[in-house]
Amino acid sequence: MGWETARKDPAYGRAEWRRARLAALRRANWRCQRVLPGCAGTATEVNHRQGLAADPHHADLEAVCAPCHRQITAAQANAAAKRHDQVPFVPRTRW
Ligand SMILES: [Zn+2]
Image (tube, rainbow, N blue to C red; front, side, top):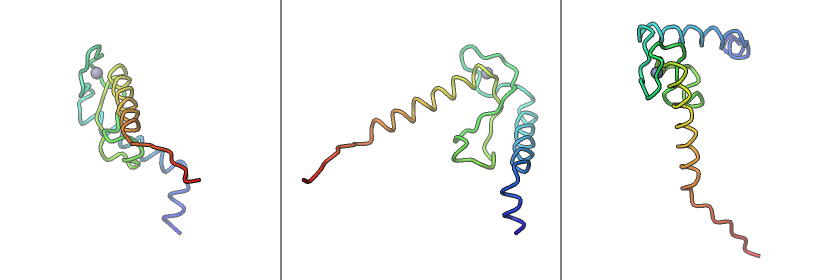
């Protein structure tokens, strides 16, 4: 009952996220940990290194600035699209 209640309460997820996000930023001393071309230097966002779907409890975060975060997100989307392309998909019907 306790677990179910916590899981269904949307405020629980938000509090957990806020805590994890702030901890990641503090750990990095508010400096961007990626420093990609166009980096703003100061981290204001955090990136899920393995993607949110793989890390719903925000255990593997890195502090990033907004420009870097955009590039990381774009690269992740690209990689996902590539992986999808590489899956051999040969539709076959037997009739
Ligand atoms: Zn950056």
